[in-house]
Amino acid sequence: MNQASSRHSAPPRLERPSPIAFILLLAFAAFFISGFSSANIHSDRLLRGVMNLGTFFGEALPPDFGRWDVIAMAMLETFQMAIVGVVFGVILSLPMALLCARNTSPHPVVRVIARNVVATLRTVPDLVWALIFVVAVVLGLVGAGGIGVELSAAMSLFRYDQALTVILAILVVVIGVEQVSAWIRKRVI
Image (tube, rainbow, N blue to C red; front, side, top):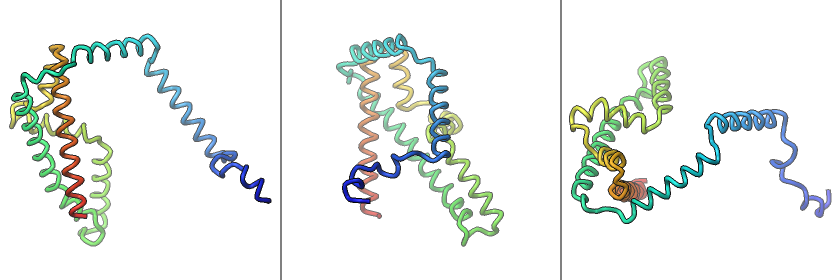
């Protein structure tokens, strides 16, 4: 093959797909089309959604910082709940890690069971675990507070300016925690 023809040939990934890749592509397309049609997405629903979004931002701007003290306390309470959850997670993860490791597990059957438990727990999204934790533990201990209550109340009362303030508070805390976490990872690793 000469140099001129090699410059114009397609990369291997763009050449004719294998039969298996073609079947997988068809299956993906079928699932996508089925999911799209079952989602009942129509242009009028999309237009209504865009108009609702415009209404939200029209009523949310400027944010209302009049209840900033209440929102800050709710954010602190939520942050405390998250810290408690992380500590419990770390405490529970250490024995599971020992049971999952080949060199520290007491028996191969225990190791397989522990690894399957961990794999099962990983399949459940973090948000679901957070909801389960809040419902099972926090509601009884804290009294169902937190920033979620503030956001839900603001949205239910159509106080979008207060809702935007809550959303901004969450955003600031999430970005702050992520920055601190990145700094700690850089120092430790």
